[in-house]
Length: 165
Image (cartoon, rainbow, N blue to C red; front, side, top):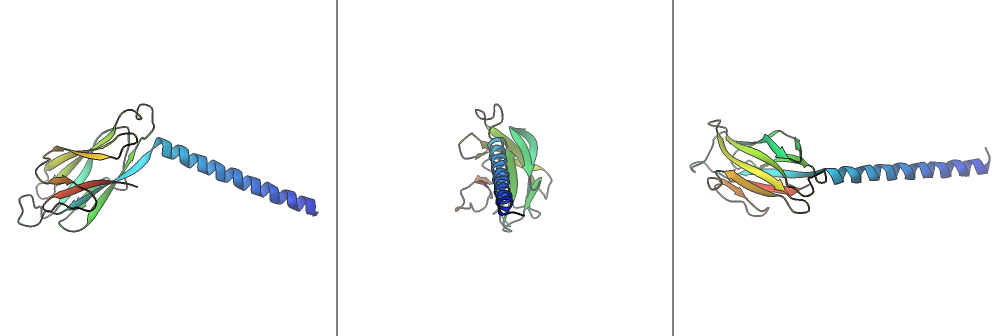
């Protein structure tokens, strides 16, 4: 094998690697442009003896109603007991699908009391294009749920907040 063919093979391999890297980079950018991920976190701070305490805790699940959504992933539901840490639901939404740039992406969730099996509250996760997501408590908003910031848990409440991933 001559030195010329060795140099040509080396140059060819470098070009193929660059093309492959560029292709993978472009695919990841296109995928991110059309969909994004968020986390909905839930923490139970309702202590025994308080009005809305549930021995078996609360389950948060997607109700199936949503707009510009690809779905809830990682878990379909999330169950929290008192003072047992936060649980997370992953939300996969359309960020640039046709019509979703100018309209909100949203997903409805139900909060179920595991002692009774009844829906104790409802909320809507909502995301506008280029704006941080918000939670709107749509049923029983003053009863026991709190849309909180990362550093301030509300005592006696089922705390819900959202994070960019």
